[in-house]
Structure formats: C-alpha cells, structure tokens
Image 1: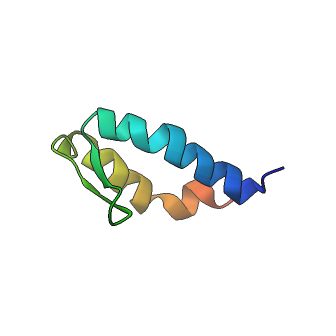
Image 2: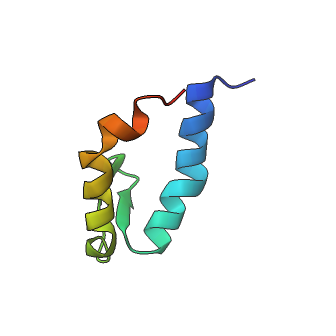
Image 3: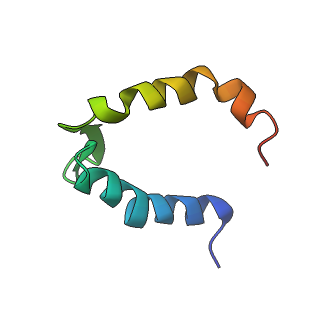
Length: 63
C-alpha cells in the first residue's frame, strides 16, 4: 500500500504531468528529471499566479 505522498507523486507522474505536457503547458525532460514552461504556458500563467497569490487563504484549512 502506498503512502499518501507516494499516491500523490504517482498521480502527478502518471496523470497530471502528461496532461499538462500534451496541452503544451509544460515540457518534461526525463533525462534531467525537470519540468519547464511549454509553448502554451502563457495560457495558464495568470491562473497559476492567482493560486500562488491566494495559497495561504486557499490551503489554510486543507487537510
């Protein structure tokens, strides 16, 4: 059985990152194990900045 953290990492690697990469929002470099902005990143940049700006309020009561 996976720990909660391992489940999140697995979902990120097998589901979330591939979706973001297929959409062109990110580029995954498997050789260096890094993620970079993709050609369509600007389409979601404002939303990510909003999440970052409001993170303390949004995640304050997060389990």
